[in-house]
Length: 171
Image (cartoon, rainbow, N blue to C red; front, side, top):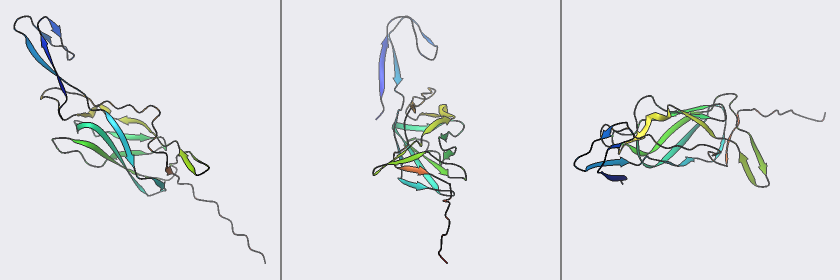
C-alpha cells in the first residue's frame, strides 16, 4: 500500500526539500516513505560465455525509473542492464539482463557439498533514477538500496574459463 506519514504543523518548520511552512493555520504535510530493496533473485547455476542471466531486484513498494536507466555493476566484471522500464504506475520488481562475456568470472569454491561464490552487485549506476512511484506529484523519493556485503546468490557461478583438457592415450 501507500505508506505515508501525516504531520500537522503549528509553527515555523522547514521541510526536507527546503521549503518553509509558515505560522498560521495548521498545515498538513505528507511524507512518503522510500521504497527499500527487499531481495535479489537469480536462477541458480553456472553461467558461461554467451549465457544470459536474469537478475530481479524486489522492492517493498512500487518504483519507477525517472531519468537514465540504472545498471548493475557486478563483481565478475560485467554490467547488467535494465530489461524494460516498469509501467507508468510503477512495479515492485525491476528486471535486469546480464550477458556473460569472455573474461568475466566470479571467484568460487566448493566446501563439501556447498558452492560458495563472491558474485555481488558492487554498485548501481544511475541509482537515483530509481524512485517511488507512490510519491505525491512533484515529490521525488529515491529508493533505498543497501548493497554492502550482499551476495547475489550463493549458488551462482560465472566462469568463462575453458577447461584445459589434454588427451592421454597409450600406444
